[in-house]
Length: 358
Image (cartoon, rainbow, N blue to C red):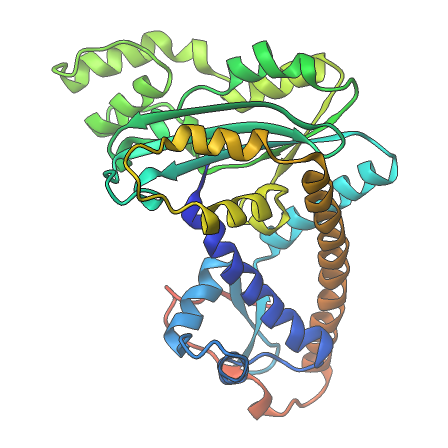
């Protein structure tokens, strides 16, 4: 589930990627830390210090790879992240080429205090929406929950029954349904608590699956309930949903995490947030969000989709071009003497950097 704040962070996500691509692909230059900071300052991002840039690089999946026969390193993106993005792009572009009808699922959580000054940070709004760029909004579900942020992902309203019971019959036959991967979709979130788990972890597991228990129960009592219920929840909710989607003749395509820039809803939420900071106590955020979706004309969804398609093609080509440049640098390092001042030295702080031996 994506936080509203994350949509604002997508601009930084795109900035970091564009920064690296600009140096490798367009300038044919190795992006050292000094070069990148100087470039950012020259282009109006003077707030990004060297330390801030290191944090942004790490947050966006960039690591340092040691060059052969040297103590120098070059900046590269985590190979796993590149593989996931390229796999997704290859699939979505293939489906587009086939002329398949594509439907997008939105899962967003909004801390209502971000929109209304009078509301507490413990009030959250959950927005699920399904949109077809050819047909517009197919369905939407918006609700609020007043919970502490620590329990946020354990108490979100279940989306699977809503999709299966209400939405799937509205989706044209043979569609490709793009589904965003979220942190709670991960298998680690589905792992069965054991005797070494904390009491809160046991409670979270039970609450997530709507299994009743008494808050006063001891760990031994909680683990007993978990053990008796575990076979009912062997599949994740997302796995079950994919099976249901396939049964209706559709294809489920998961949009990998950290790919907010390739979401149809990126522009929608960015515009919404910029124009809907509400201070009036009588204004209801649920109605505001629902209206923003329902009143959005079909032409806007088509516009968002056209921009998304162009971005997919551009990123797909940039990835391939950057891969060629980096391969060339690694090959040169194996067989030629490189100028040491063109590269960064290894930085021993493993929290900021990971090194891959070549």
